[in-house]
Length: 95
Image (cartoon, rainbow, N blue to C red):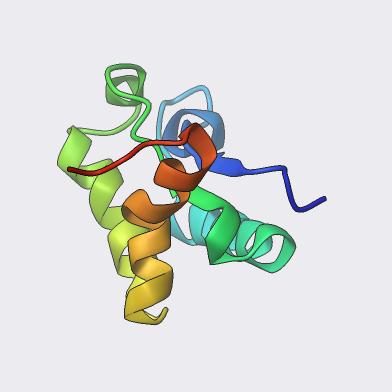
């Protein structure tokens, strides 16, 4: 369904066990599945801040997981995930 988008948010807290530890490899598996299902044009980064701090040491740690994973994608796909998709989904205009 082309009108459905997916926000990549809350992954560290959902992937964390009761010990509040998460596996980057497990998260990358979820990211791969989301990419296969939605494509980069319908994925958008969301930090889940401040809730992400329940499992991650910082906001930047969460961002780095997604950025490292997205590094294998084209510049256009990375731009979609880190802003372009949100612009389209929410009808945002950049001035």
